[in-house]
Image (cartoon, rainbow, N blue to C red; front, top):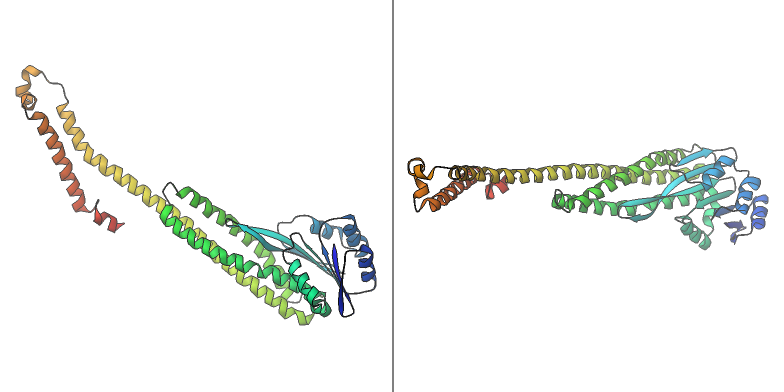
Length: 335
């Protein structure tokens, strides 16, 4: 664990548990950024800061939904930030924040935002001088700000998805597009499920429901809530777009299937009279009486006549279909 202690007007960083305990006992303002679970970290949380065992369990363990707990001595906040994004899938990362009177504890497993806040604090201890609630605001603000670039990137991917639906649905390349649509739906559904709880947490912080947040910091927490509300609205619109893409995919696939069935039906319709004619001439007749029953059997041009008859029927049917607009340019224009 890394602690940054405000010593007068200067910031002092340390990893020594003894120095951290001494700073807490002296009432100095301190930010403790936990890196991993260890015996020293557990002793600090349990023995020195008297953190509730359930809160400690939430800090170290994974939790799928954000939460906020208000205790007598501290305020515990668990939010989700966005980590890496691969192939339309968002990685939600937990960030734990515990706000005390003069101390702040954070546990950012991947250093998603605390590394940036720590770098800023190393250059200027102004945030810690104002109070630990202002430092907690900086962590929340950066966690929410990370959403917007990723959400904007989703916009371009969903737009490309809509193009792929029109070009590939119903074809051999349509299956990956359908898998991509379903992947987007799962991702946005998970984002929505998380954002409902996180939005409520940020709303409560912006209303000043907790004594750990000073009145002069409340407008800044309200600004974080407004940013997240905008992100939530954009994500909701993306859910509608993905749902529309799925409907369009099924519609295009159905239309192309209808085109296939239409083509097969037209081919069957053309072949049906030809099969009838071939069946007539393929029947068995008595050769001795063929000149009375079917004179074409002894006619030298009987076989070419039968082929010409079938060809004529096929051409007549083709032009009749074309005049009706079932095939040809007029059929494509109608689609």
